[in-house]
Length: 275
Length: 124
Image (cartoon, rainbow over all chains, first blue to last red; front, side):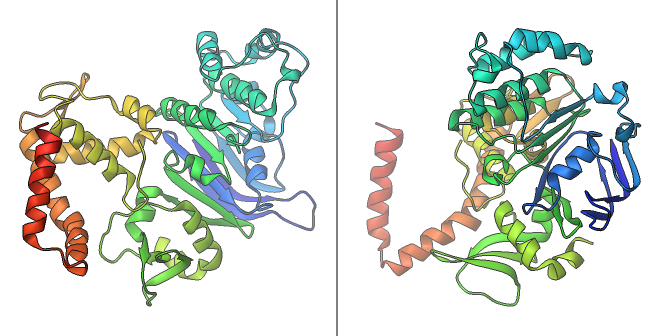
């Protein structure tokens, strides 16, 4: 669905954020995009949606170059940015002005999502809280039925019940012809939804692997003592939370935070395991 | 459902399904929730539930009727018991044994406890 080849991108000429980045993403998956602040998560998402332009390299999103911003592609992209502006109108006016750009827009589904999120539909968008606004644009975005769903920190601002609703909704919208990319720091909100981890670090992709591949190759568990099989560890109440090479085919649960720190700290040990 | 943090999610979902079959909340020859329904209920990726259903199909606990959905197999109860028993013996019992040993708990004391537990829990 998405092919990125040798992408070079930066906001200023001298300093590149991505150097020769290449990656392929397919439909039927929820990708979790991770990286430190400033690693370029949002910039990568903006490149995919045609909101910023690369210096060189090629990008193919569903057969289109997003930088050309062709309507045929844009109507198949749902982009939920982290920072957004909503006008001083009520929801029905917002839909009237914007839904027309999306030929597959599902009005009944939009209404159902608003009800599920408990949104006051008669209130002006500008008077809503940040979390309510966020839920409106998530509902609108999903109701477009776009094939590519891009979300930048979608759970920011959502209250506790809304986060659970959000997870249920995301579990229900993943279909074989849809590709969902979520960038987040709140990995605990989403860790059971993500099936493939993409981690950005130092201008490139430090790791791209499915949860199944990661847990086949690595084992995440508490150990009492450290030995040479431990790749990375953090002290915990009962010993250490450790990442080990999975020599005994153990089926452990992926700890995304631990993996994240392991990739940052032990890139050289992890690289050969995943290549 | 509250997931524990030490076991792969797809295996925890397998336990969840097995538990429902053992308690006969889902009965033999009945349809089980679709991959999507269960994913929504448990707030997990549908691909993870698919992995669970593949595992349970291989163990002949559920079977796939094409175009209709997944059903509890005829021999599901026996197969769940043997699957869960292997898991219990390999994973849970060693933890119990360790504590029994460390705390010097006698087998006669365990037996009394076990009998009253069964009585209270399953034949109230």
